[in-house]
Length: 509
Image (cartoon, rainbow, N blue to C red):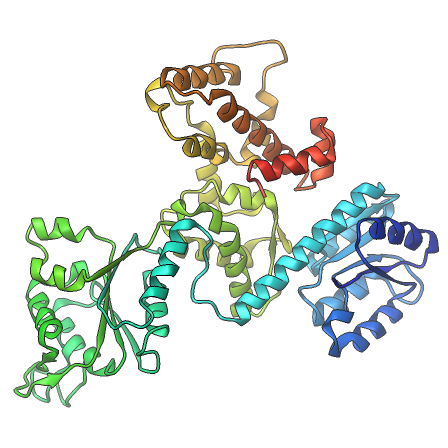
């Protein structure tokens, strides 16, 4: 592991931090001024392992301030977490340093365990960024650790040597075109073109010409012969998005191509052979469309050789953190700015959002945050209005009654995240005094929840409700302390090891 660089002209500060970090098995390297650091960075330019994992710097030092050092480091090493140590009188300048990309500030005199915990968080952040950069360098088509996404990846792997027609289903914005591109990239046709067309976005009168091309003089304005998408995709893959919206008469022409591999340009008399793999996608229920006469049954069976269902983002909540960091990196690259980081509290609040627009909506939110968030570290309060409104609505939802209680443990436990840390914190002043149990209080809600689970015949009520109670407490405390675990543990009256163990046990990482 790369060392933690400590920059301070005070030898006692360097000594204390070095010893504390070494006890945590974190290697260190110390410097007395900014010139030494910049020279060491220059020397380590050719050997990445000689550079720092995290840099901890004082603000006031002879020969250059820590803020000047921060500016120079961020210009050359934007992903390196920098912690600024500051006396109380320097607090304003330290806070303003966040706009320059500081990871966090450490006020002097500092509590040593808190300092170590902060540096440990910066190390974790640095390692996450390194993994993210490696993944981006490898240009992955898709991200996802959720079981439903792993099923999709396995299916892509199994289809990698096949030219079979595939039908991709899923809600709008869930990434169906990404799946189609991955299927093409990992197929025997990878060297051929990938051509995509949204059949719902093109007027009916133009769609036939777009797909099959036209001959000169076929209609008014057809001054020259034009090759359609089938010919453009020759030897490769044609992706037909929103196939459920294709006009009925064009479905007949598409069926002909899929059946015998030939078609005619509009106004043409010579058959054209199509050497194309077709991948189709839709957000509609094609079986229902067939029943009501809106889609040809024979075409449905031609397309439905292999069907891949792409899950909605709300079904793969565990992927939200990785996707968020990926899109923040992507947005920063597009805009030519430094990537922003996102706090655990903000991620927890994002996880409560239902994302009706799926992955596309999350991508747009990250683009918005890259432009609109005021500091380099995105906090829960910086999230866009629709996310905040969704969290507030979830917080206001009444406790379920007995009729709604017979759900799986996974669903019951998942309800923990239905209230964001920020909304819980903001509601704190209205909590009744200890020992009182007014109507509508949380104790009443707990009683109703327990009654519902007991009436449903559950035999794990203690475990389910205990997990929800502990999760809510820990998320609220972390939101209050901006993700600082040691401080959250102190406020809850539990030990540092206890909160770390609980976070792991409850899946709150």
